[in-house]
Amino acid sequence: MATFAEIERDGWNDRADSYETTTARATTQAIPALLNSVLPRYGDRVLDICTGPGYAAGAAAAIGCDVTGVDFAPEMVRTAARRFPDCDFVTGDATALDLQSDAFDAAICNFGVFHFDEPEEAISEAARGLRPGGRYA
Image (cartoon, rainbow, N blue to C red; front, side):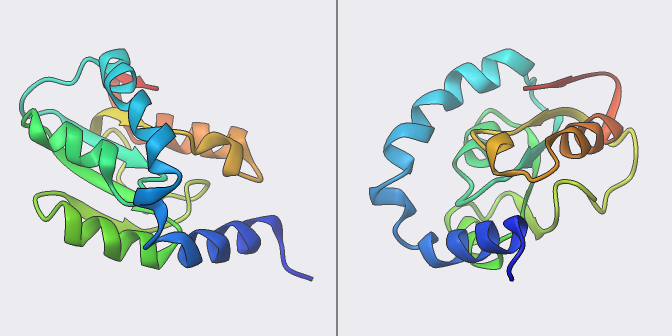
């Protein structure tokens, strides 16, 4: 039997190409408030967790941030990399991020938390990646 995480990953892999005409209509509306919550500044390193097709990452890059987006669905990562070539995108698990501690000024997660089977672990991992004084939303 497939795990929760496997079902989620496979579902998002299947929806990578159709995201723009479906889910994005709702999720992109939250990006300005999300970014406002972490107050990114030009040159800040921002981690976008559950980046999906990269819309929040692209918005942070547009204001001059150095952005890394992570998603566990390889098709979403490929889609994001095509759409936002100025960002770095990697395939990874939000509950076990392959990143240095204290590496980011801000971490964002736009509508991703309810897709985690272990949300506390994912939030802890995001916090580990933040520099002292880093911001998470």
